[in-house]
Amino acid sequence: MQQTPPSSRSAVSAESPDSAENPGSDDGNEAAGSENVFGLITPEDWYRIPLQPEDRREASVSALVKRQFAGVDDQPALRRQAQEQLLGAAEAGVEQGGVVLYLSFLEAAGIPLSASLLISRLQRRFDALDTVSALSDKGETSQVRLPAAGRAVRRRRTERTREARRLGSEFEDTVVEYFVPVPDRDEVLMLTFSTPLEPIADAMAELFDAVASTLRWQKKA
Image (cartoon, rainbow, N blue to C red):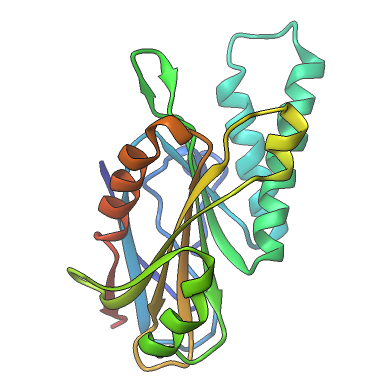
């Protein structure tokens, strides 16, 4: 796993399209003047797509497509389709209040371990008991304590996505969500992990928990 440096919650930090290819780039948020910063450690083969502003989002997707199709010049239709799908996924993340999207390109024995992580912010006050109560009818929900970030609520659930139905998949996506209060703010950081690999859902959930456990807060100097 590669460490993601602590990042400013006042802005998604600037980076060039080339540096966007580095999955260890820093995460971020807006809310100008905030002193809270967060960092996260993700696997090296997770590709990071900053979702705001739009030009950075598009540049990052273009860089990813360029990397995935390196040396392949005879598949323009497939390349265009991949770019459209990735942009669609990124735009869907923006609609959910996302600030950063990670896509997994991990493999085991040549088999892709498909997964994603959307980092979002919710403008609401966090109360662990109320959150557990509100979410308990939509999955396995519990209060947890992250090693560095402190108290949080974890929910695991399954859903049959539109993409799965379109592809005729018999499996449901496994979703693991973390709701973490932002220090000194009426705001919640939401980590949404997802994988379509139902047969190894438990193993993927353990990986998601390991990534979530690295979340940490720092005070901006």
